[in-house]
Length: 233
Image 1 (spheres, rainbow, N blue to C red):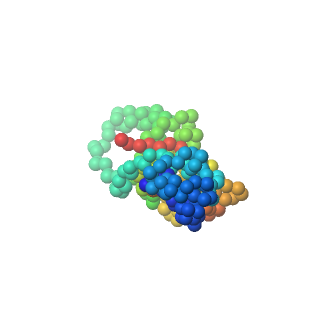
Image 2 (cartoon, rainbow, N blue to C red; image 1 turned 60 degrees about the vertical axis):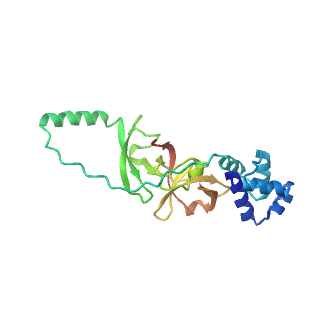
């Protein structure tokens, strides 16, 4: 079964329809619906929109089609947490070496910044140097940005794999269509945000199927917005 077939089947079942009922509602043959779900045929964009609309999905049709048609990405194994080893003790530097090091650090102080890499529990795993441009990193204060190491495959459908690093800038309010870092009761996770009318919003994750959670703004603690993905080959 293909990803689009999975999406059609899951939404049909969620809406409480049989294949025959869905076929009748969309004006298609029942055999065509079965072929789509089994992956034997791929629906056109128009057919996919009709099917998803029949399943009660209106605002997110384009997102469903784009993500369901993306090729499946093999997820890297979940990285094992580790403790940064302590550096071995070095001989005390000479006065001349201290002067040289201070000058070098002062010169780089406004050029690069050690950005912490955190895991889903907020534990700092490591650091990475980032350039500071006009006193900022990606338009934010250098001390406020961080790197989040993706722990699992729940965002694989959006092209984010386990082990990927995402540069996160502070943002306490939801940003439409953005991948954001949120706090789920002390556990950090990534979700794609879709803003609705009023104070309503939808949080999307995508492992083997697209998952949708309806929330109010007040129910979600936003930690930041992801602005860059870093992948090590």
